[in-house]
Length: 180
Image (cartoon, rainbow, N blue to C red):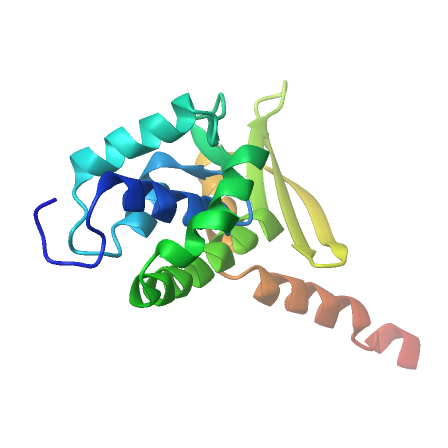
């Protein structure tokens, strides 16, 4: 332990990692666990890495095949027991960071865009938008080039609600031919 902070030993780092893992809404990669854990100045990378590996070895955390970490039932039980051992200020800072992380994770799961190459050389682009109730929009488009597919994917990720709103406006607008 090198910095000045409230976490004083490796056991407290493990408590903090379990506290975090119990509150994220889905499995997270190593870098995200690290970022969330470094909320106290006394924690260094090497102690963190060792503690994370110990938690996996003792089956408090599970390392999934895609290098994501999730908490086990054993980890949840122990986290609940030990969370009061963490300093209040560390928990507050951690909760603030977790809220931001969970918003990003929720957004990633609700906004999806992908593309694939078709047999004829064109590309299919799939754009999906969900909310808490389920699917809001699932749009499949064909584009002639890969760079166009990537552009659609990127733009959709930036503002899917704008696209949804524009499509709805077009579909619900009054048809000038029907007036005549």
